[in-house]
Structure formats: C-alpha cells, structure tokens
Length: 402
Image (cartoon, rainbow, N blue to C red; front, top):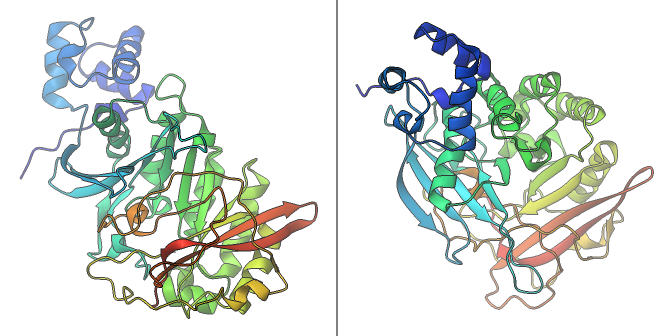
C-alpha cells in the first residue's frame, strides 16, 4: 500500500495551528509563516520554507505533503486551446482536470485569463446517460487537499495563476460537501488563495441536500444546474438523480438559492435528438425558466468509448420546428463570451470534455458543410416579470441520439 500523507495545503489556519502545536510549536506567528509559504510563495516543498527551523521543516516533511497530485498524462485539444490533465493521487487513483484559456476576442487577441475545471470525486455514482464520469462507477470523494491540489498542479503546469474555477469535472460536487465547502472557504480566503466567489461556479446534477448545505454555508459562488429536461419524464430518462430528487424538490431549492444569491442561476441543457429537443420541450423549459429566471446554455453531446448514446443522427436540413414555438424568439446574438474548444478532440472521462458548455458571441448562420453537425444554444433573457425570450441559435457541433 502506498503511503498516504495528510495534505497540509488543505488545512485552514485553525487546523494548521493545531498541527504545529502537536509538533511543539504553538507560537501564533508560525501558522502565518506556513500559510504565506503555501499560498503567497507557492512552495512545493517544506525545505523551501527558509524561515522555519530546520527541525520543524524536517518533521513537517515526514508527516505531511504539500502537493498530492502527479500529472501522468496531458491531452491537448485539436485546436490547441484546452488541455486535459490526468492526475494520479497518493493512493494511485486517477482523476482529471481541464485547463481552459480564454477565447480569442474579435480583434484576434486572447486574454490571459485562465479557467480550471475541477473534479470533486473519483468517478461518479449519479450515472447521467450523457456523462462519461460514471462509466466505471464511484470510487471515492476527493479530500479538501486534493481539491486544492488541482489548483496548484494546474498553475505549475501552465505557469500562470488560475483566475476562474468551474466545478464541472469528475463527480457531483454537492455529494462531497464535507470536503467541497472547506475547500471553497480556503479558495475564497484572502489569506489563502483569495479568489472572488464570483469567479467560482459549482455545477450540480440536482443534489438537493447538498444544495441546501451550500445555501447554509453562505459562500456566494455561482451555481449551474445540469437540467437537460424540463419535465420529470424527460429528466428521469437521462438523469437517474431526478428519480430521487424530482423537479418538485429541485426547483424550490433553486428558488431558495436565488433568494440568497446575487448571481443569476445557469441551466445547462444538452439537446439530444428525439429526447428533449422538440417544441413541447422548449415550451416546458420556457415555463420553468420563468420561475427561476436563469440564463440557459446548451452544449452538444460528445462521443466517447463505452457510451451507448454515441450513434449519430443526421439533423434535419432546415432548422428544427422548435424555432416556431410561441415561447421562442427569433435567433439572436448571444452577448456572453466564453472559451471554446474543438469538439471530439478528447475522449474524456470528465464532464467538461464530455459535454462542453459552449456559449458563442455571435450567431453563425451558414450551411452545415458535413451534414452531420449541429448544436442548439439556449439563451434565457430576463425582463421585469421573468424571461423575455428563449432563443435557440444554430452553430456547428454534434447532435446525437440516445
């Protein structure tokens, strides 16, 4: 069995003070020194902590680790934008994270902003039909130190600081609140990482108890919900979590979150041919959005080995009749820019590479050159009393069927 050491970089100041006291050094400034080495100077070893006594450094190195992850494989997307990192932890388990640089602007320049897609579990127990994370079942939760460790590993790999975090990697974040919430407190602590909560997005498949814990924590992060169906029938077909926490329980929890948050809720919605892309599905989504006033985005499904839904279906030659729905406005440009990456570039086991969330800054209105690729983007626009319009835009990417 490999030796698994506690991860000191995942300790709060209080926990760090207690750990140092166990080693015989209970002076209050010592914890401050170690925090500065971990977070400000990004120390990778205890030996670098030059203002600590040599004996204390040696004892810390014997009992703890600072960097729990080892990158064992790197996969660059076809366009050279996103970079998927396969990491091995101390016990030999593997997990993935994804580095996502900012998209090119209209002037052809790229911002230095860097987003990291973070995993929260090894595997996933929720078994969503479109997601590769659960193909091999659930192994275990990531610890607070392993969640934090992804940030350090990503910054070391990229050579720059991470500006945004999206918890959209492997696992259901809100099924691991015991470790997620302490990690969020460290990430947002000005004496630790100091990242603004508005630069952090938690994505959930609809874990209602976990969502209630997030609300109770008071940590003002952004929230994205993997909806993918606006009725229980559709959602239960592709997301088993809906059988445990149906929309009648999920929607009130989301309304409670919105009542305590200044951020707009985001609905994630993958369009799957013949499953959730008809006019009645758009109408149901529009009705649901009126209550929650979210911004909605959709993504394509991306094939991977072992997924039964990888069969392609040629979309209709013209735009879907969904556009004629009374709740749908004519296609319009979206105003929110986001990073993009080449579809099908990665055969990923992580949510980010499996179901890329894609928001375009302009409507691309041209014939499909290959006749097989289409994506519908959903944008919910708020007006005084609720949603002003729900627009579906066509873009080039994959459209599949279960």
